[in-house]
Structures are given as structure tokens and as C-alpha cells.
Length: 108
Image 1 (cartoon, one colour):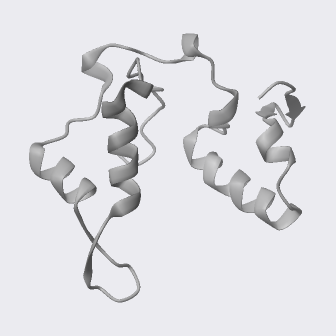
Image 2 (cartoon, rainbow, N blue to C red):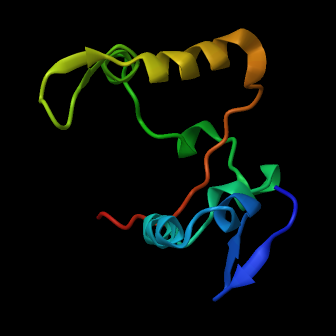
């Protein structure tokens, strides 16, 4: 994303600017929970590559995410094909570095 726009001390990406007004409002609401950081403006230097900063995840968590999910609407289990696409993307060599953006804990 090339050009950035500063609005109310928040940097917005070209992606944000391409959204319709009502979708922009939802986007702003979502990023307000993450220190108003638009993820599309982050640079490699903004990430931590320390293992201690990664969330604690178990094999069961990964299996549940990659394979079996429960539909929010029907409460029935279904195969999560979209997350398998993400897994395949990572294992195919397209992802080179694993980084995390550390933000303050808004939930504790």
C-alpha cells in the first residue's frame, strides 16, 4: 500500500480509502480495539520476531482452527477450507518470517 492518509492521528491505507463509507466506519470500529492501527500500514520494523511475544497456542488449537470449526449461525461443525488455504500458503514457502505486533492488553 503506497499512499497513506493521516486522519485523527491514525494512518489509513489505500485499502481503507477504497472502502465504502459504511464499511470504513466498521473498519475504524474494529481497529479501535487494536490501538487504532490499520494493519495494512505496518512495516516489517513494526513487528516483533521474539518467540516470547507470540501467543500461546497448542496443537489442539491449531487442529481446531485448521480443520474443524463451528458455524456461528447453525452451531454445526464444518470443515474450514479457508484456513486450510492459509496453512497451504504458509507451508508452500510463501511466508518467510513470522512476526507479531504487540499491542496493549484491552481485555485484562
